[in-house]
Image 1 (tube, rainbow, N blue to C red):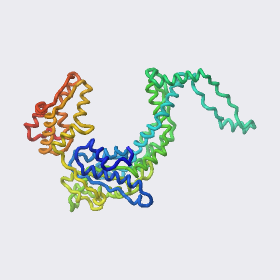
Image 2 (cartoon, rainbow, N blue to C red; image 1 turned 90 degrees about the vertical axis):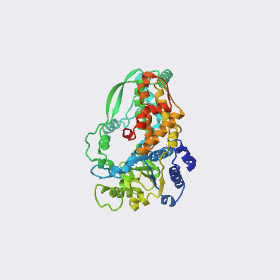
Image 3 (cartoon, rainbow, N blue to C red; image 1 turned 60 degrees about the vertical axis):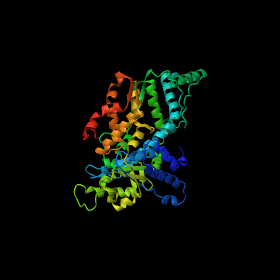
Image 4 (cartoon, one colour; image 1 turned 45 degrees about the vertical axis):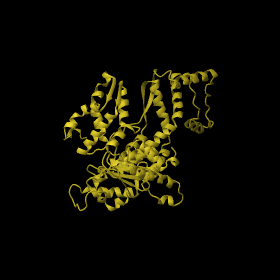
Length: 469
C-alpha cells in the first residue's frame, strides 16, 4: 500500500481488522503516522523542525496497547522494537544500557532491509544456483570461465625480458549440441526432476570466534571484535552430501548473499530508523512513583527516566552500523498506571509524550467480537488447528456467549488481564478435544452446556486462583 493511500481513516480501518475497540488510541496513532507522511513532503528547514508527537497509552494489560503499535509498524513496513522500561533498572547489575533500545531497532531494520534485498535478488540467485548444479550434474556442459592473464606470470615475463603478455590457450569450442544439452539439464533441475538425487557439494563456513576479545558494551557500540576477526580469517570450505533440492537452497542463499551490497544495506537501514523507526516502551508506570521518595528499593526509577529522556528528546547513538539520530523516531509509551499516575513521571519526560490516550477495559461484547470477528479471531485459529487432525469444530452462539461471560466474570473477580483471559478459557474448554483429536476425529459442537461443564470449577469456586495467569 502506497503511503499516500494511508489516510488516518484507512489506517483505523486496517487496525480494526485485528484490534477490537480502542478508537481513541487508533485515531492517535493514525494521525501520528499521517504526520510522518506530511513531514516527508515538506521542503527546506521546516522538514527538520517538525518532530514526532510521541504517544502515551494508558490502560490495563491485555486491551491492545502493544498490538496497536505492532500492527501500525507492519502496516507501513517501519522498523519496530518493543522494550520494557523495567529492563533498564539498576544498570550494571541486572539492567541494560538505555541506548540498547536504539541498537535493537537498528538490528530490526537490518533484518527488514536484508529480507527485502534477498527477495529482490531471488530470481538472479536462483539462476546462478541452477548453473552451479548443472556444473556438478554434467561437468561436460560447463561454461569455461573467461581467461585472464596472471599478473605474476606477466611480471616474471617482463623481468626476464620476455613479452609483456602471456599467451593463454583459447577455451574449448562450444557446440550447439552442448548448449542444447545444458539448457535441457537446467530446465530439468528447475522443474525438480533431480531433487532426490544425492550429490557432494562444498559449503562455505564462517570461522567461529569463541571468546573474542572485548565486552558486550564494546560489541554494542560498534567494536564488534568477533565480526572483525571473522572477516579477516579465511573462510573454511567443507564437503557435504545432500540432495539436489537441498543443494539448490544452499546455493541460492549463497548467491543471494553475494548479490546484496552490505554497505548500501546498512545505509538504508539507518535511514529507515531515523525517518520511520518506532520504539514501543512498555511498563512505563513501573518506573514512575509518587513524588517525595528519597530512597528505598525504588531509588532507580527516576534514574531510568532520566536515562530514557535524552533518547526521547533526540540524541545520537553510536551503533556498529554507524551513528543513529533519534530526533524523528516515534516513541509510544504504555502502562497500566493503576498505582502510579502519568503525573508521577518527571516533568521533562511527561512533556515528551504530549499525546495521552486512555484505553478502556474490555467488556463481554468486546470479548465476543474478539472471539469471532478479527482476521486472526481466536475461534478461527482453534478451528483450523484442530482441522489438521480431522476434527470439525463448531461454536454455537450460546457457547461463544458463555465463554465471553465467564471471561468477564474472572477478570472482574481477580486480576484483569484483558483479552489474554480468553486464551486461558479456550484452552480449558478445548483441553480434552485437543488431547484426543488425533485418535478421535469427527465433529465437536461447543455450546453453553459444553462450556459450563468444562468450566464447572470456575462457577463453583469464587476464589478462582487456579485460573489466574
